[in-house]
Amino acid sequence: MKGFRNILFLAILGFAMASCVTSRKVNYMQEPDKTIPHYADTLDFEEYQLRPNDRLYVYVYSLDEHVMNMYNAGGASASQMRSQMQMGMGGRNSNELYTYLINEDGDIDFPTLGKLHVAGLTTRETKHMLEEELSSLLKELPGYKTVSVEVTIMNRTFSIVGVKSGMYSINKEKMTIFEAIAMAGNIQEFGDRSCIKIVREKDGQTTIKTFDIRSKDIINSEFYYVEPNDIIYIREITGKSFGINSAAAGLAVVSSTLSFGVFVYSIVQLGIRLSK
Image 1 (cartoon, rainbow, N blue to C red):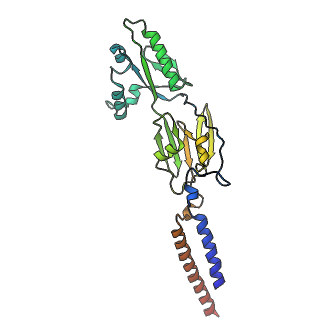
Image 2 (image 1 turned 180 degrees about the horizontal axis):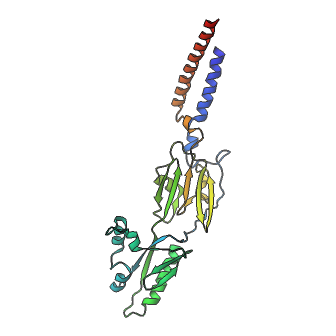
Image 3 (image 1 turned 120 degrees about the horizontal axis):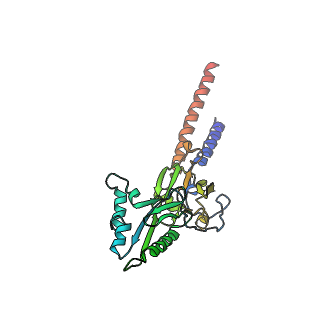
């Protein structure tokens, strides 16, 4: 009987410890070792290149009121236009009123300039191109004044699927993987931080990048920045259903299971004696 108890206790204790969600499994910025990988210093942020179906917000600044009225929805200020885009206007999607959709050929149709090819350019390059084109066109006007252009991508998003699902907006030029996860409310307790996957499409090719977000080396690696349209997949830790998230809970499981095992053993032994 005593030997059976010892074996049962050790088996349950081993199972409980294996299932326990420890700080080692959930903490970020850990030093690489045999279980947490090292990543080479390959950080190389590339500005996002515009693609078909991106939607651009363009605002033209000028001291000439006529120019402002011509390109900015009747002279509305940049803040007014952004506010109307967020709230909608007249039952229509204001994004469509104040933005330019890049078509399948990579072009936008801009007032007075016609079709402009912007696919493959960054927002910075698109801004400079528009300023040059507008300056060339408007300089013939009497009292011409220099124009400045603001270009922003409006539909920049990333998605998280798996143990934490949702679609979120990229609201800054550079967004890190930690900022993306923070927007989603962090990875849940049973999310597998050792095997994060990012599905990324670029130049018509889809790639899957896999990494361990617990590693401190992430901040210097190719995995650090999130790009528009990225899909971040966070799977569950194997055996989640039996997971134990604290030592106290583990001991409680061991104790109750051991007691139940002893009870069952006693019933079986009693049955054997009564059958003799």
